[in-house]
Length: 254
Image (cartoon, rainbow, N blue to C red; front, side):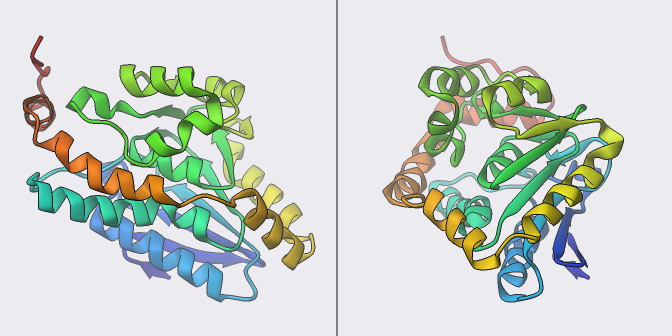
């Protein structure tokens, strides 16, 4: 079954959601955003499904982040986009059932955020992670309210301010990734882990997720939605976005 640009299939008690725009590195297009929301809603509504796995189609990318081609960057459009994007990125947290991200390649920007919003990340040894929005004169929207609690303030600031990518092994060391497996074993490893979860008492598993996720999705999301459009109005963001679209180095103000 295809929902938006996401392929949805079930294997026993496991739902597999495959982001399927490999030509765009599975970036968060409208089709993928809609597909993620619709697929996780279906996971919640299907009593036969106990666990969901999110992965990307192709060997290059899990999800390369926002698809900004042709995007209108005026503040109203940005605010609307932030509302839609944060709803998608928070969807794994809000799903009642455990969600595993099987990260098969690049997980940058929104792709990184989609992964860390999942309950567990299993990464291919080829995977890499980054929040590179600073290179556009911007900051990550979802990670800015989650990352410091996961890896500490100093490391979260370093990743957000430098925008450098980290390997799967480094992500594991930081606690972002549960385990790293050989690339060819990724889906098998994710399915095996999902089956172990699915074998546990359903209500207890869902309550464990709910308790550990208590307090998420509060006022910090509203601050991100209201505050980030201001960044897009600054000359640095305008230059960074233009440089990205024109495939050149950005020249930020000193």
